[in-house]
Image (cartoon, rainbow, N blue to C red; front, side):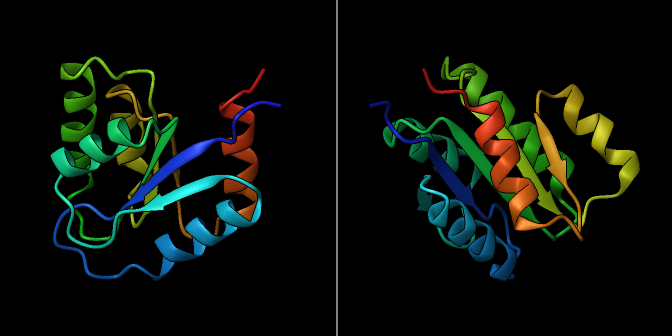
Length: 132
C-alpha cells in the first residue's frame, strides 16, 4: 500500500482570512490526503521549512492580500535553494488572471481562482501527485 499524499496548506504574509484555506484543507483531508495546516501569518521560509520537515509532496498557498507575486516567488526560490523542487506548489485566492502566467513561469503548478469547487482541487491534487 502506498503512502498517502501529504500536503502543507499555508497562509503566507499578513492576510488574516483563512476560511478558504480551512475549507480546502478539510476537503483534502476528507479525500484521504494528509494535511498539515500551518495557520495564519507564515513566512515563505516557515512554509518551506515545514514542507521539508513534514516530507510534504505538495504545498497549497492561499493568498488574498494582493502580495501573491512576491510570496509565491519567494516560496519557489526557497524550494530551489533547499534542493526541494520535487515539492509541487499550487495556490488560490484573489489572483488576477493576468498574473497567473507570471506565477506559472516561477514554477507554480496551478492557481485556483474564486468559484473553483473543492472537488476540482482534490482531483487536481490526486492527479498531479501520482502514487505507485
